[in-house]
Amino acid sequence: MKSRKSVLMPKERKMLTDLGENLKLARRRRRLTSEQVAERANISRSTLWHVEKGSDHISIGIYLQVLSVLGLTEDFKKLASNDPLGRKLQDAQLSTKKRIKK
Image (cartoon, one colour):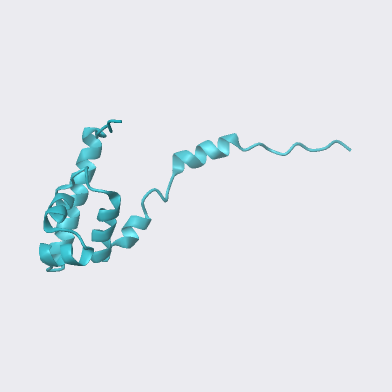
């Protein structure tokens, strides 16, 4: 069975590109070389290059490994933690208890 390649919309592609750029800046601020980060994340330098470019074929686990090496795992925990639309939908479907007549 042939697998399908996922297609990202421009907005999502821009988000990944921004994430990659932010990771690259974080690495540079810490004065770490790409070799050091790649070795600590247990990935190749070329994979790190793809991460820093925001490539969509890199798994989220690898992004998490790089975040961990840079000490940014708390940022990862914040993803999807606030869901106002989901909460509104949940609240709209909550049924109120009916009072029993005496």
